[in-house]
Image (cartoon, rainbow, N blue to C red; front, side, top):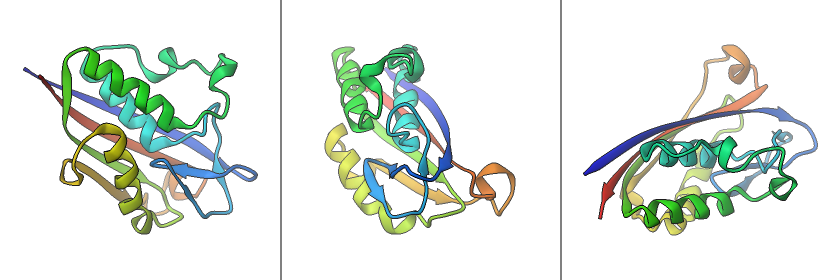
Length: 158
């Protein structure tokens, strides 16, 4: 049996925060605003994983009203959700994702993101796609006010 899930996240860019995407720190003059580290890619993947099994979304599972999640590293949240997936008897077949940002350029960072995420999720590089897109200077992302991400996850019953 297969299950598919889709995830999405967006965060505002602000000064005074580190930019963390895909579990790595990216050199940039602004970072993403959020209760956790605001890692849009990991958050989209988490929601896709949860959605595939019709579980609660990331905000319900890790509420921004809970101080224990303040500034938490999103890789910790991803590890927790991956354990939920395994405990339900599923494995990840593949993940397809996009990071949508006008700046900075994401392509140089994607290989390291894949290393981090594949290790956490126990999948091979060929089963994780991370693509970089822009908004062609349109909307909040295109005007460098935010970064967004989306992801699709396919799970298989073990």
